[in-house]
Length: 399
Image 1 (cartoon, helix red, strand yellow):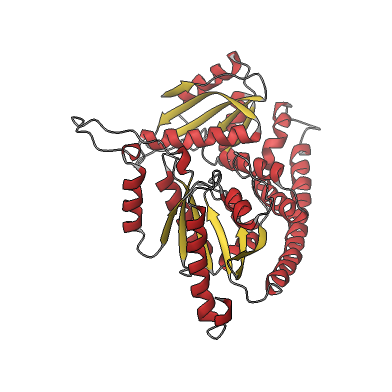
Image 2 (spheres, helix red, strand yellow):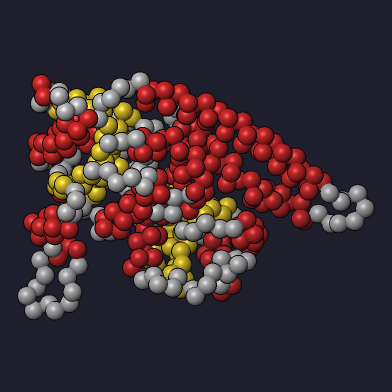
């Protein structure tokens, strides 16, 4: 199965995207995943020329895809001078090596692509150390790929072992580097823990959500600060903490790194200290992009990731952002097909979600246009005040 040819652009490396439709997955889901992969590729600086999808009962242990589909992609790569092929799933070291031999171009998987974006986005020493550690942990089992040129040499006397010894040397270097980076991160984590401890007993609220939903824009608007915000994935890597005062009530607001489906486990491991801000938060502000056709899936992905990070139940405010970009398509009266998300008006969605989120407050805003911002501030104020009253029952002068 082939999914469309995209608009060509002369800038950036030319890429082909590859995904699979596995059991218990619809074609629509697979297309949405590969569209997200395209956005990742764009964020990294690549230009997608074509997407390929294949329906599989089980992935091929050697080449991930079936031999026919691999050959079809290879021919397209050769005839169109493609620079790289990007797979939507993580490839094993053997699959990566085999596909690279067949295609003779750069092969990336989703994990490698996300790590590359993180590396380009990292600004502070802390973020750079976290990303570098994740990259080395990803690279370590895949080292053999770097020495495939030695396979072309003939065996025999005088040709035994140079490749193997080089790989072993590199493995030792990388192992030492991983140990050093882990030690460095441990020291940074201690410093961060001290910083968090020095913030006193102020209530902490953390902005969480899928990547590119507008957390940094909300942070800038509420705290009147200048946190970097851009319409690309993972614009914010470093955790930003600001003291905010609503009416006369002070609290700390944290902007955290965005989540995404199939986030490489190496990154989750490396960004532990960044995620500590989520663990230690008293209040979560879960931001959703209501204009995205799959925002409900994003909601589920973020909740699953949060459950892995912290098992504690926390009060949560659900913020539906980008209402200005929401598109409502009225369904014809004689159309008997089931309603899709776009067939519900914003008012209908509000009623649905307010009824569904019995334990959470829901707010519908546009951070870009500051629509309903007073309502958002009022809801945050009420939640922070409730936490304050429990923590400081005799500090009535604050409110």
